[in-house]
Amino acid sequence: MHAKIDELEKIKVGAVSYLNTKPLLYGIKRSAKLMEQVELVEDYPSNIAAMLVDGTIDVGLVPVAIIPRLPEWNIVTDYCIGADGDVASVCLFSEVPLEKIEKVLLDYQSKTSVSLAKILLRDYWKIDPLLEDAKEDYISDIKGTTAAVVIGDRALAQRKVSPYIYDLAAAWKAFTGLPFVFAAWIANKKLPDEFISLFNEANAEGLKNIAEVITLNKNAVYDLGIYYSNNISYNLNDKKKEGMKLFLELLAGNLGS
Image (cartoon, rainbow, N blue to C red; front, side):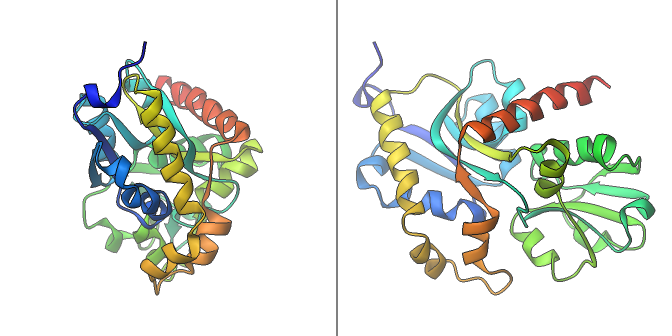
């Protein structure tokens, strides 16, 4: 028998504070019933992932690459941060074409994006540049033959700067024929069915109100209408789950190589 919500402490929910999560957070923050039951923490993906792994939070919108590190995991909604083609905000940026890249700086904010980049560099683009974990102010180091994986809102801004942009989700689709899931709502324990149902409804609410989400998050860097409708694909359908399964298999192979 599942525990009732009122028998538990508040459920700690971790979410990413990027533009791509705003539609999901819109409904969550506007559900009075849900917000009575949760404690919401916003941070960047790798921090939310670490909190889920160490049990600081109960459920998080986390990079799917952390799944192998969780002793127990459950996907708790029908929604994700995914893409079925260009995602726009997870890219390899460079001043030179792929074949001339000598070094790639890897964004510290998401393990999934970095892992995806490593798989694509090795298995799809078949190039072997020096890989280096990026420091906090690494964007200014994208010059000459040094490229970088940049994610999130900073990637949308970088699109106006770098002459060569290699979209990782589009490359994955070309490589595998499948969509890609960057992050999903994952719990590290069994949560009450009542909560999961309410949480799922709250996620859906924002996707029904995209126009208002755009109004609340005006952005001069990138057209959010295109971003929310054409780039980010929020429904966690069977094809996305298939893409996620393949990515985790390739990730295991990549770690073992």
